[in-house]
Every structure is written in structure tokens, then in C-alpha cells.
Amino acid sequence: MRPDIIQTGLKGKDMQIDQIKNITIIGVGTMGHSIGQDFALAGFQVNLFDQSDAVLDKVLMRIRKNLEEMAGWDLINQDAIQPAIDRLHVVGNLAEATLDADLVVEAVYENLEIKQAVFQQLDRVCPAHTILASNTSSLMPSSLAAVTERPEKVLVLHYFYPPHLMPLVEIVKSDRTSKESAQAVYQAVNKAGKKPIITHKEALGFVANRLQSALIREAIYIIEQGIASAEDIDI
Image 1 (tube, one colour):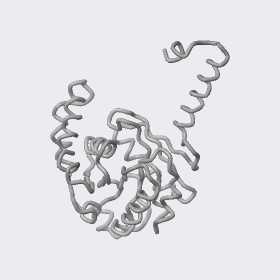
Image 2 (cartoon, helix red, strand yellow):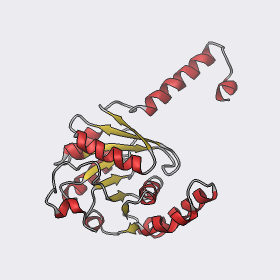
Image 3 (tube, helix red, strand yellow):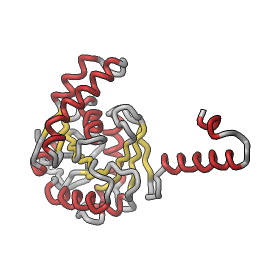
């Protein structure tokens, strides 16, 4: 399933917004399997990779269960389930999993050293055109781009739990992420039925968590001022 972008000699150049076809998910546990499910449901070919054989053995069953639940809630059609499953490919070797990847989404533990090690490895094995994205809620894309030779193709892709139900996705650029990379990912995420936003510069908490923190601070202030009880604020 080698994409046209490689065959036509565009490898290494910034991708156009309609050229993301093949997506690889690295780490298919709590968040990753759900992200892969979304892309497959939208028509993308998706490779699923994890270091844990036990996780890989159960991932398709887990995704099918999610899809069956969504069909039961009338969020998707029942006849969309099998085609989505057929677009998902469980691959136990990282080089094979990323061979044709236009976009790789890393969803491993929220630990900078672990994620940097993954990005170093991805930078070595992925095609030169591949965009590398991290599903992180707190780490800056520049800290991941710094360990690669493709900083213009590195960004954060912040999903919220559970990804297959929550609509918001934050695309966070570093000062070296190219506009073309961000737009390519924006279009892919939008095609997957999400509501993506682009954060143009790095900032602690990105957008959503900063807004949430502001609301929490105001709630505490309301309690301190005796304006309302915690129970009523929760309501």
C-alpha cells in the first residue's frame, strides 16, 4: 500500500493537504486504539503498533466493541463496522508498521524521555515525508522535534479521552513546524469527523487545559467569596 507520494518522487517534501492516506499509531492502549479507530472509520489505512504483544492481540476486539457500542447509540451505521476493521492492520515490527506512513501518531506513556526515544527511532525508520505527531497533553512539540532531523514535520496532536467520542483535537505547532504539515494533519483530523484547532505557538496547557484551569480557579474564588456552594457550582 505504498502511497503515490513516494512513487512520484515527492518523498521528503512538505505534503499537500490531500495526501495523507496511510496512518500509523504507535502505542494502541487507552488512547491509541481509539485514535486509530477514528481514522479507519473515516477511510484511512491504519497500521497499529505496540511493544506489547498482549495489547496487540486484543486491539481489534477492543475496537470492534467500541464500534458496536457506537452503532447501538446510532452514532455510526452498523454496516460501517467491518470496512473500518478491514482498514486496520496489526503490525508487530516498527519498521514494517511505518514503511508507508504519511502520518505517525505516537500515543505512549506521558514521559518525555520515553517519547523522545520513540521519536528518535521513528525519525530513523520513517520515510522522509512522514509527519510525526505526539498525543500529549503537556509536552512541547519542540522537545520532541529536537531529537529528529525533521523538526518541520513534528507537532502535537492532543486528543481527549475517549478519542473516538470526544470531538476536540488540538494541533500544536512548534516554532519550526511548517504550515504545510499542520494543514495536512488538520485536514486528516477534520476528515475523521473531529473539530481540530491549531495552536500557533507552544504554551503550557495549550488552549483547552488553560481554559479549564481558568474555570477551576474561578470556581474556587466563588467558593471563597461565599457566592455559592461547591455542590451548586458542580451542578
